[in-house]
Image (cartoon, rainbow, N blue to C red; front, side, top):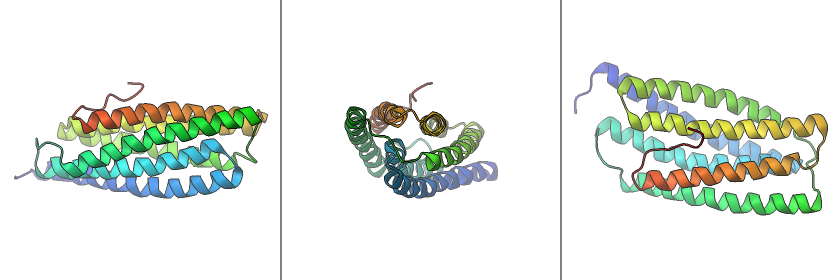
Length: 213
């Protein structure tokens, strides 16, 4: 199908934004899990696991961009649906892990060694997520693509998670309140549940409803 140079330019941007999302989530996941374990910060550790799940979701988004670029109006392919189903399952699994560990930490009054890494990682993540949302929205508007716009809206949940990590890490760093990290992990569990629900909804053909929208 012939596409005007203007449309090709925006689809190319959407493609590279999806690639950047995958690469960044892989790096963010590795760094966050490493420091989460080293600092005994459950919120940062959970944030890292979430990043790996977001990476799988990003692969599904990349497949979506390629599909609507090459075959506008075509239904979701099996690969795209499978990526979304794996993502949804991963998020629900993360809910169980974070909830169980957070309740255990609350019962034992466990606190992290430090949350400085969480503050730095969250600040970087918020900045990048804001940029991704901005440019994905621009691409979606320029192409008139509801799918790309839905992806931009759903990316806001990732920014909410980064904000939650920043808040819990800052609170502990400044005040030393021992349960701040555990509460942050429970907050991540809640947002993970909403993301899991949205992933299964999109796998079944629904557009992203996006928590908070």
